[in-house]
Amino acid sequence: MMNILVIEDDQRIAELIQRGLGEHGFYTTLAFDGLSGMKLAFQNDYNLIITDIILPKIDGLDLCKQIREIKPDIPIIMLTALGTTDDKVEGFDAGADDYLVKPFEMRELLVRIRALLKRHTKTISNSGNVLKYSELEMNLNTKIVKRKGLEINLTPKEFNLLKFMLENSERVLSRVEIAENVWDTHFDTGTNFIDVYINYLRKKVDKEFDTKLIHTKSGMGFILKVE
Image (cartoon, rainbow, N blue to C red):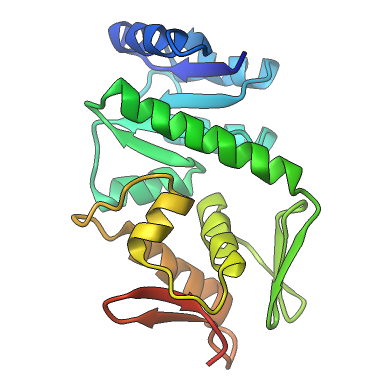
């Protein structure tokens, strides 16, 4: 049985999530503040963590960063009432794999959970692989990215976005496709967080090099290609 840690200071919401997940075969552990959640995350093995952002003692962003340092591969979903592009980018930068805005439906949370668990299992089975395109190299086991031998430091979400582009090099990727495969979510046309992350990647992958690899195809999406 999959074991999920839920960190949510609103006891009513936490228990609703616990009940809903239990009905679909998931075992859940509850924590009602960030400090308790962090201790549980470090002391036990969970298949996935769900955390609110606004928490007592340690907020969800700092919590996510600290968990990522100790357990870099565990899937994390953030729950919050904050839904702007900047809020989402901040959550992803902290290390979250997905972001769900309150109020949400249980079936949507279940879809996100299953997608993350499926992708996480696939990543584990492919560990040790190296993706290469032109001068760019990504080690999926060590999480090290290099271009011309120079190491590039990426956030977890930047890493996953570049991984998807490497796996689909020389093919135009729409924003919808990127959202569904990298963020496991439907693209929200009211926000531009995908463009924000593409710009982050450009600054790290292309800025210091004469040959540019990440390109925008107007009205269509983005492509990793030597041009």
